[in-house]
Image (tube, rainbow, N blue to C red):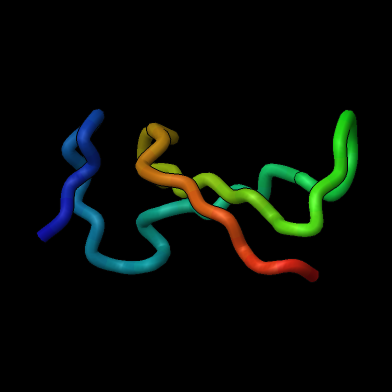
Amino acid sequence: MVHCPECEAEMADPDDVEFLDMESTTGFFTASKRFYLVACDNCGAAIGSGVAGAM
């Protein structure tokens, strides 16, 4: 079983994490890829990040 490193909440389902789009296509700079952050749905701690392909 996987647990959050901050609050030790159990992560058994996809609903236990939150995928946050970092809005890489608007704002100060633009990019052809979308950056995202994966966070614990219980406490909001950042668990990982990544890059999705071009839109």
